[in-house]
Length: 447
Image (cartoon, rainbow, N blue to C red):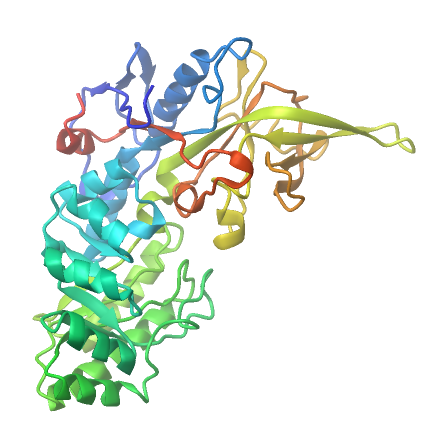
């Protein structure tokens, strides 16, 4: 099966109501290619995992056939989009491509009408190759490579951010017709990944930047901010919108007619409603209805849509002579230098779950998973580096051995996009696509 393989599914039900799109366990009749039936999104994912594993013969398979692979439910991306529209109707999402540049995700979001937040020439190319109009792209990188700016100009990608004087002089020289967003710093102290340490103009510098932009005859069309990736403090959005209002008023003094506010990213599925509620109120308070609002969600769309399956390639037995107990070190075919890079770069804590031991499947079964009286395991990646550890200690009732499989849910954000080829291992793994939403299938032409 190729990396772009799409599992074919059928359904007998129509769309659910918009306010129930994000109910993960809603019932619909789905049929995976091969005649396996599923009643929920989880069952559909489980069927895809099962079918893929049944095609592997560990005794005779070629190198690569038993590699790590993903199952992506594009229906989950679709539900997240509908959830966004329900909670933030004023805010047009511009998907943060850096989070997961999966081509099918980008295709689906393009069909749904989103824009795209790109951070480099390569990301802009990925989006443009899918026939997305340049005006649906924002080059949201305040400190850009010269040749990338020239490339953006050649492709008509006009929207871009800045936060310093040197960038203004660069844009004046390379792309004077750009549509500029002044990025301001925020309080991102409660986020997983702080960004204002690196980007964003302090509030006491914004007036000077606007004055210089006016002097250089550049076109400042809006303000942008980012409260940090994986934000958890709703008040950060309120204060950022408040500050943006100040910059809008400053821009008016200098003759700029700013029409757009970019509220950045930071959204997570777990806290979305609470964060969206505060952001909605702040926008209503400080931004009149004629102001266009865009946002840059990334992990919000894809984190929960991807499940990762990994293979136990080796096991080491650890005997405790004082107690007579045994524990095990399990070595997987994926680790911190691969799709688990999120442990280091994104402060994630992926939870291992048993997919298959021997001929028995345990997908979506709570029994035996991480039980206090079970056998203890530590779980390691395949490289020769000692830091390549996925889990220090976890207990299972089952005795796992070489050839067994584990799976990890919520692996769609900042995983495969930052995988490396360290020690010669692959950074490209198969993705099996399914869809638990008929709307997504219709948009993508999935039969």
